[in-house]
Length: 296
Image (cartoon, rainbow, N blue to C red):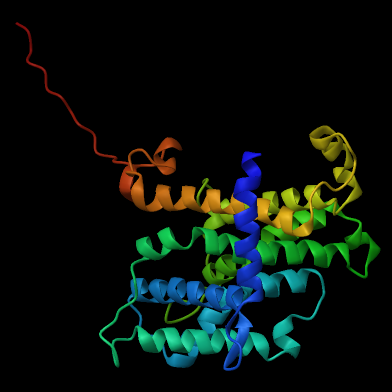
């Protein structure tokens, strides 16, 4: 079938990125985590640059870590679980080393290089973003399913909520604290302001958790849906196969976001369709008065 031709290479790429290390001796950590650190390093540094602030090194690193780890920290906090950063040095090594290396390479001090444009990076990374994000979402679903508290473990709603938090947590935490500003302060996260694109990480994360949950039957409440879909009230995909479907779904959503943000004219984009002015302009309050010639 046609869908298998798409899912097989997706599954192979997901498996390869998850199992392959950057270097087996000097940096034996999965490429998924390294690429996620690279992606967040670029996103955070671009935000800092756009803000016009020059942050001290430790503040710059701390802001990056908030953005990179926000999803994991929020998820573990909601589930009353200790985050890996509390008992393992691995996340510290991967993310701190990667961010410092990226900032050094693109600082222009040693090499005539500057950060790639956001449009270029956003256009290259949708599939990689989806693979990295799917791991966090699926890990969150598994954490709920295996939770020690039966009320949590038996809750389908908890799986959906944690899927959304795993997806949006990093960006939401960074926006909430304004970590790219000189002085951190509480701000309104962009996803709370509504719109298809600003809220995508929330609803796409929740949908991804539901897709994976249905395919693997992570909760008994999916049985009626699975009976409707495949004729049997049971799991109909392996965990890897279900993750591949999630990766394809998220990649499609991220491509849509990239196209809407960077390629579709503002007058035709989703913001315009929702009634928002093009190019972020405020609605004009100027009143035009037409003087008619008095008819004698």
